[in-house]
Length: 208
Image (cartoon, rainbow, N blue to C red; front, side):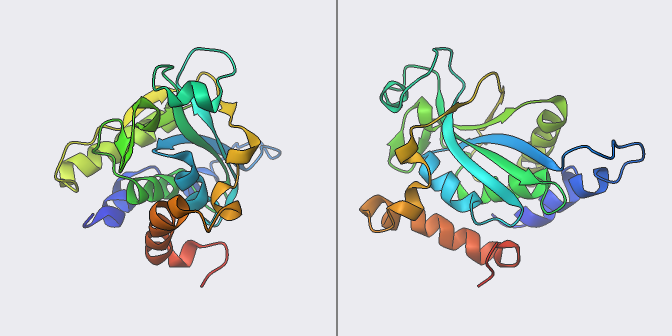
């Protein structure tokens, strides 16, 4: 992961600067959403809930075609859906650049349809963009990471248009916060959070 933050800083879209563009509607909301898949949504959600500027991180499903998929449906790996987290953030506090920095830090974008022991298309690495701006920003950081040879293996993160987001069942929301003593939380999620807190210690909601 050498030079990851420098590469991101120099090459990705600076959303803070764009917020002050002349002619921006005075009443435009400062809230924006981006939908990411980086393995089990419990892990991704737990990390982003601690990033300053993130208003909500909702676990759900995206990328498939069936209506109202359930966790059991998605878990088969045959629906086309991925476990995702839809992140709503305040553009005055954080930005897409930082959101992507965190994303490419806390999951492995080089393992196809797998994160650790979690295997299947539902655990693929993907960015679900809702507009051209998000797509371009995602392409920019991926190309920069490839050029800098940050990873030893090729990046397999897919860029997919967001057509529909389905919120996951209630028991999946805030899973880590509600189940910290579970073995999966301690062995899989906690190390990701610790890595995030170490590298982004100045950007935590509650600085430690």
